[in-house]
Length: 446
Image (cartoon, rainbow, N blue to C red; front, side, top):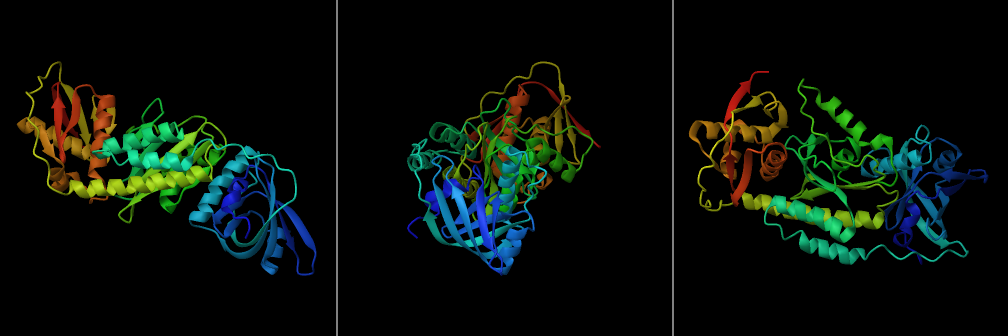
């Protein structure tokens, strides 16, 4: 083909409706408006199947179609000659098209009408440029390849997981002008993701959770595929995703939900799975208050960055299994001042409250409670990752429930919520608990 699908990918963003022409067995033509033409790969596109109409009837009887697509910025038109191959009603392609269609429907006021029933996959036989006088192409916002190269160089520098995550988000802002982003890690159960780093939000949201399959982030994790939305949609909003997540997990009677960071007026969203060592590690999520902020080039760049991030996280995880560094010199004991503060622990879910304020739960809560008990019984302040990993009371499933990520989560929650309890790294695989106010540990039965 003289033209390639890659060269005209902007035509598949859904910004301008397309038209599809089919033919009945008796030769009667039919032309219909089409909500979405989705780029699949070098030789395939997928059309949204929403209604069993004349187009659908014709394609099933005679598997050929022609589609007219329009470039949203130049108005250039292209005719695609297609051959129908199959319909997918679940899986990564279906979920990606479903999410994008939800944004298109919301943008056009058709949320109650546009419902994806299937993704019809076609092989592209020919691409023909329709004669006309298109506008000149606008200059690109930035050199994506150069930005990607510099970003990849920067995110390999981090000496530990916390530094790696912070550098990744800083690089997205400095090099790709992505100002709102977060990284979520998959917990050991494989049912939830929890926020370990964010950038560009008033509240960090570290420790906030979302269930697998909920919202843009949860669907990207479940299907292990990028999910990109170019217009605001209530169907994939934070509020709805969090409500669904809570309903799935059930309420435990305690107010332990940490608010998810996010833009109130998010209009473009992109969630990319992070994988390493052959398994899902988490999700890199970015968003913008602008419509159509993230295109196919942005998606490609974020997929590459997530791959680099996943590989580096996997290498860091492997390194933590090795020999711990020798401990740094212990500082003089921090004097405790002030009235004692009650720290409550609920064994049912390992949630921890400092006074009346919720801090953390789950594995991070179990870790924190172990540290406090050791401090109370023996005034112990120096700890190693290895001993935590081997402690059965913490119930750490395996390396897949990233211990380093849990410690980062705990460290950052303490920094945000408590002035007199701190965790600081003292070497590879080692850290210190600093306590500057008396604490009273209270084990709760409920």
